[in-house]
Image (cartoon, rainbow, N blue to C red; front, side, top):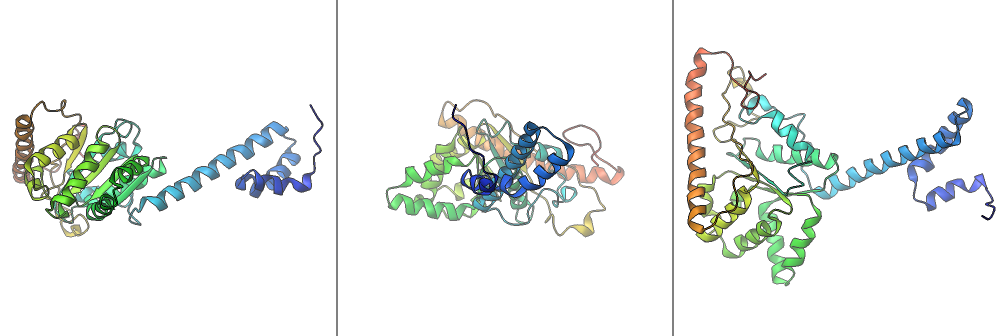
Length: 316
């Protein structure tokens, strides 16, 4: 092996050429400390390598947060789960790790009226997933539909949908506000179908499945979209909740949970009729949950606490 001439004066230039900004910034302090403590060169290099990796991870998170288009300031830490008791904090925190459901291409659906906290939870989950190393894109459904329509007119729809595959999770906010137009709902359905069982979707909507005929003009398309979304899905029904950010005056009174979770809802349907039956059954389940919640409201007049739907113990 040929002899290498070492010129320490060129070290900053070498680190810049190797694209090691963290090492370039910290090596002098670490080297001085290593000389003072008599550390071996291997430990010195290991410390620099760890710092470089940590710096790269930080910059990667910043870059992915910038591309995610996430609304600023939406985090799980500031969300008041007590104001939305049908939303299990433990379950949401588990979803924030993303290690299982994103790998399977599973979906997450949030239903509830305006002001129930759907968009905040969706954005906060997206931010947590980015911080855990995943790539997420947050968009209003109307905006992404308009972009996909433009790509279709340019004969680039398939390529545009394929580019979205780089995101582990695509958050479609306010699906119910998409206008009932064949062109719009067609590209939306193609997006849903393309990501089915490959990449995950998180959708917020203020209308239950039974009202999605107002979104998709074609009943067959409505059924097919629901089929692909609920297969391998977790569903949170936040209906019947007051605005989570404006209920401070009512927080002294506990509210019973009306949490619904559907995970891995069977295999795909064998016929259109079966899927129609399932769609109607899901809508009935939501209605039944609301009736149970009203009954529980009457019950809590005589009790001070209620059971956590996940652990079975009292929620704190």
